[in-house]
Image (spheres, rainbow, N blue to C red):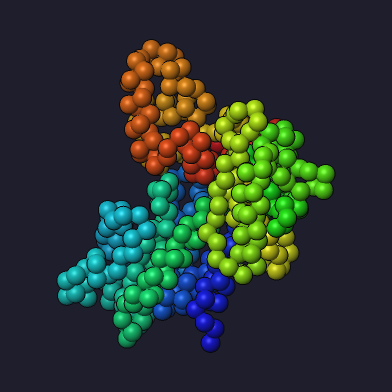
Length: 389
């Protein structure tokens, strides 16, 4: 039997392979469950935005009919209690059925538990992978009745995996939209208003879309050198980028664990830095070829204003109409003083509103606000390069 470290790396490899909109979540849930002593898992992502961003997945050895019956006929009240308790807990808190129902007589009498026992299941643990709350997600692991619930060492393993699962869900979002809207990922990359680069460890560019080429052609903080390799604009940023690429490539080859890296790449023009997510990439499908391992870079240009929409952000975090208006103006690059003058209110009023916006969204500045907005509602483009939503 493989040791825990090897199985952990292989589980991460399965997560890295979900990037291009793969529906192979069953294998991922099998691997996570096995690693933490469970019998199987369920994953849900609920989003108020495009329907294509919803995920409902179960371990591969669970019958779809059993999962559907459990969710529709038995788990409604049960699920509402889980949701409330997970919402009230600190981000990424593992919650067990014992935490939720300390009165075991009440737990044992629940229709959902009686149904689970028919399948020889009993204990459960659940967690919300998304720490920033931009969408609602939940991972649940179920355990055989005879073995008891999750153990301390297994809980630590699950806690280590959760940030990787969260990043996989977030990274997949724009590509999931491409796959479901246009039936392809790589062939439809130019329909995405985010810069996308697939590179090797040394920065050699294998794939790029139009938005990435626009950023590289500007030669303002990120460029392509004579050997078709990407380079940052200054030495310090270049060192950070090089190290991030190496770590991500080693992780893609399953040589080490690496969560992800988000870099700010300063621009010589003084504009807001580019934001670059550097993540390991594996492909078990048809996009890059079976067994591919490399590095994915997703680039956000905060000054490419026509790509930014705050509608999803406002919906996810419950911004008021006034907060949504101010948020939109911040995202478009207006200063607080300009916003105050435009709206005919005091600067102190706008400062108070901006602080509320940053507090609600868990961001600290315009760059983070824009990045969060584009993560929640990835920019899809029409054939003329105009944002669809």
